Image: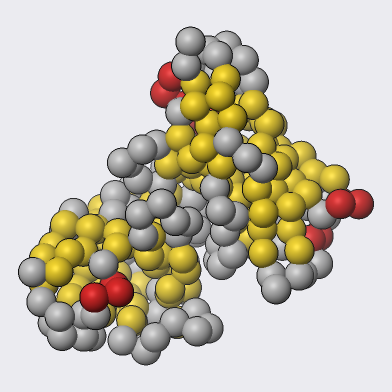
Length: 107
Length: 115
């Protein structure tokens, strides 16, 4: 199985800060990577697909980059409504696997 | 609108089985795979398997092989996930999600396994 190592596991930042989360795959997954946002008690929400494509309706402050084994997710200006846990997921190989999640809080 | 609506919460005893449904609306059910993902309380997301609603083909994570069965009824645009030989560690919220992007998710079904 492909291991997805996501870091940090949690972070605290101020409103307006730039926030960056990384995800490293244990082998080359090309660009077959999604990023999700999950708020407490809710289902995950797709934000980024194919590593860098913004899902329809998602604010442009969210972005993704990378290919191969190293990926980055960025919130360019953190907003109070962005408080959530973020997950990366690879779908290059079965089983699909998720990163461990990053809990984002407001400082 | 495009949505997946799941069945309600379940409480089961160890050793029992549970069958969760996922009804699709707003799109052609047979055009997208359905993935099943679960999440124990306070934990991360765990992929269980997928099903192609058109062919009925399935693929399961090795961890669940022999215990999980994914099926569908195309006449009512509904996918099902049945998990057998339940144990306490199976207590979790179970989600269905549409396609390789998993762009649409059901609301989740809480399954509690307790004696």
